Length: 153
Image (cartoon, rainbow, N blue to C red; front, top):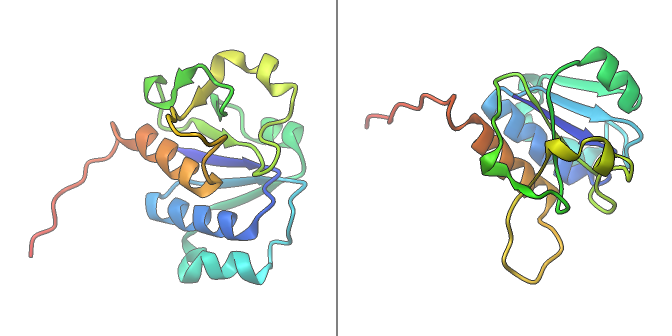
């Protein structure tokens, strides 16, 4: 399962997501422009010493990403009508998330309407933190594929 961040802005979120990707062996795709440099200290700190285990790919825009990574894309958005747990994920799909302040590019809502998913919320907030949203959707997408064995003491 691939994680895609379109125009991420907050380095700590990206660092936390990179750590999550290392823990799930999920490639991480970052799409420029970004609100920070890849050598940003705060991003590196949030990812701790797991960076060598992150399968990181950086793309110079959405079109470059699509050319390099054809496949099935899912777009997490508060504007989606299908719950994230109702999507039929496949192992090499791409889970796409917009920037922290503006979400997905405006034209994506019509262009990818059938691929929009949402995390149901009942409280009085507009959205979840990006790193939390990626965690929720990624683990749901991986759930049928994970074969976790209990650790013995």
